[in-house]
Structure formats: structure tokens, C-alpha cells
Length: 597
Image 1 (tube, rainbow, N blue to C red):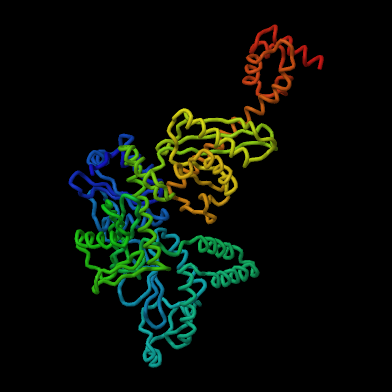
Image 2 (spheres, one colour):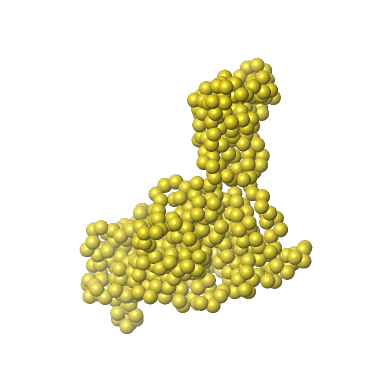
């Protein structure tokens, strides 16, 4: 497949947060950036002359744009940091050093210390973060300090050291910031209970701790220490807004590859995320054309083998959406909950976005192929004997039984064919009988097509449930078209599709293109029918009033309908306003008529 032009790549970018990567003609990484809206941010590089020569040179070199979609802007910030450090792009000056965003560490030791660090050491300690907002980290540490008096020293507080009296309490104990575990003045169980409460705060579960905060705030207020109470209040607000973790980095997930698949009739899209030391360091999406009717399992197995070989992946564990057989040396994980499930969902999301992007590009570059794909998808989804190249949809309109009309809209190759739309006045039905109206209209439509040797549609859609579908079927049977044209009904409430002779409706995926085309047909039929119905009502209302005026014929009446829209407006109009439409003499007749009546 030919590489899409830069303009086309930008045109089909999503409007979501994410990280973009620029590559040159040799596939070498030039730049990594983050964006709140990928499409707007990337477009901004190409629609202006930049202030710096470096950026202008960069823009000239860009040939390929790749991106990773993430849930939030914070995730984009963290992922950008990882990728710049891993890929070391030439045009990224910031973040290329060995510094990283800070973590909060709960040290694995007796009487655990809790502190800020930029380095993760694999000694069993727990790390929370990373945090992109430094104010947030210091606020959390201050909160912890105010709520829970913990030690800050780095003594080895083993039981033997404490019992031997090796350490003495320091100033922190005397000013009330520590309860003196170094001299055995605080039991380990009591201390660890506080550490557990802090752990919950860092995870985002701080309901109990907030109660303690509010108690502290009220205590300050009761002692008239309002400044201190206000500070605690501000810290509570920050804590309530703080986002505990990011999907992009989690220190518990190390050296794992994540694979997911999204497929349609013609192709499958496999996304791969490589996670090293808790960070996403690579994302790649592979498009696989379907030759036969391969299952997602078969395609994903093939893709995993190819991607592991291409990127020389050696991880012993992989995360996938369903069970696969890849040999005994690889551990297969199919997560249902938790952090690994979040990472898998992120991968699936990227595969979906890549597919949408490819389809948009295809629609722009090769519209015929796009239409063929949708037609094949509709045939499969709706279980039709042929592709629905020509679809007709019917809708009734009446208000309290007045002016019953119907509309027939026509779609050819999935797009409206407005010249083929038809309106119908219901002739044989008295009163508001939608079923009888549907029977009449469907009969008239296809009787005429048969008489004039016009092509018949492959699919008829009836706007309504079982009753409307049965009414339309009477006419189809009478004309001997049963089996020659597929016919279905769509009920408005739950978008249920009804088939002749089948009491159980079909439910399509709410996001499927097939359902979108059917909904577009139904909405178009409704719009077209309602417009005609309103015109007819207005005309009937004017008709009843205007026809009785001597010297006013049909053409004059139509001109008045089109201009004034209602009888009320016509009655209120001045002789000058009416004469501008139909002339002085006829205007005088109308004005005199309304004065006398």
C-alpha cells in the first residue's frame, strides 16, 4: 500500500489526547510531542512559518506521523517523557536527560519511611506515581506529615537495635513530628496502621483519612486558629482532586508485551504496546488483510509471532484479549480487572483509532473501495442474499389523522439519491390508520416500478415494528415480490430490526456502520415526510380560506402559500405586502374579503 500523503495523515488524526511521533524519509525518529487534541496540535506545525529555524527545518523533514491515543492529558505528558527517554529523538532537547518525574516511595523496612524519589530501586518497596505536578507531591507529603507523625531518619530500626538502646530520639520527637519508635516509644503495629492509611491515600482511597483531616480542621477552628484551618481546607480540596495513578506507568507491570486486535470484513488491526520497567516504550499497529475467513485468534497468533521477531521481543509474559496457544515458554495473561486490563483497553483503543484513520484515508483516496466494503459489511450484518446497493425506506406522517402522507427515500451505494425520493398522499385510508396507509403506499410504489420496468431495490426498510412490517408485507405478497426483495422493520425505541416471520428481533452493535446507514435512512425518511406533511397542512389551511375568495385562482393561491406560510399571517398582512406578491387588483379583493368576513 502506498504511503499516504502528509495532508491525508493529518486530515484523519483523532481529536483526542495523545502523543505524536514524527519520522523522516528513512524512518528515523525526529520528534516526540504530546497533545490535548492530536489533530489540532499536529496541524499547527504545517499551517504557519515558525519563529525558530530549527522547527522550520524539522517540519520540512517530516514524512510520517504516528500517534498513540491515551485517556487523559496527564497520561500524554507521562508517555511523552517515556518515549523521549527511550527513543532519544534528535529534535527533542527537553526530557532527554536521565531525570524522571518523581514518585512517592513507601520503603520496605521496619517502621517504613515515606519520601519523594526519582529513582526506582527493586528492593520490594512500593512506588506511587509518577506525578507530573510537583505541587501535588509536596501537598500530599505535607498532608501525610500533618496527619501521621512518621519518622524521617534513616536508622535501621530492627528489634535488636531498638532493644539495645542504640538510638536516641531527635528534635522531631520533641516538636511532635515523630513518636519515637527508635527508643521503642511507639509499637510497630501502631506505626504500620498509619502506613496502611497512607497507602490508601496514595491509591486514591482516602475516605477515612479525610475524616481525620476534617477533625483536625475543626480542632483548629475551635481554637480560633483560622489560618491553619484554611490551609488544611485547601489541602483537602487538592487531595480530593488528585489523580492517584496513571495507566501509562505502573511499577508493578514490568517487561510485558500487550497485543490486541480489532477486525472487520476485509482486514484486522493488531496493536502492540511494549512495557519495560513499568513504562510504555513502544507502540505499533499492524494492518493485516484477510485472505480467507480467518478468525481473530488465528490472525493475532500470526501477528504476535511476526511482531516479536521484528522488534526482537524477549519478554516471558504477554497480555492478550483472549486465550492463545504460543508455546510453553510464554505466559499468556487475559486480564479481567485491574492495571493490566487498563493497559489492554488502551491497546484496543489504539487499534480502533488506527482502523478509523485507515478507513477515513480510504474514503478520501478510493471512495469506490470504501463503498464496496460498507456494502459487503451490510450484506453480512443483515443476512441478505445480495449487497444492498439500492435501499428504500418508508415513513408515515399524520397528525390526529389529518392530511395523511408518506415518504419514500432512496439510498444508492450507501448515499442519499434525492432525485429518486417520492412523496405520497394517502388516498384509500380514512382516519389515522398507519398500518393501512403503509399497505397502500408500498403497493403503489412497487406496482408503479413493475409497470414501468424500473429496477427494484435489494432492501426495503419500514420505519416501525412488527405491525408496520406486516402491513408492508401484504402488498409485497400481493405483487408477488416475496423472496425477490429483502424487507426489514426498524423499531425506534431500542433500534430493533424485525424480519418477516421471525418474532425475535436482531440487535446490531450500536457503533456498527450498518446501523448508522439504517438510522440515516430512517431519519431522512422522517425528515422528508414531516416537511411534506407540514407543507400540505399549511396549503390545506390556506386552501379552505383562499379558495372561497372570488377571482383568486390556484396559481395565486400557491404564490400566497409559499410567501405567507399560514392563513393567520395572510389575514394580518397589509394590502401593500399582498400586492407585492400577486399585484394590486388581486390584493384588493383579498383585503376586502377579509374585512367583510
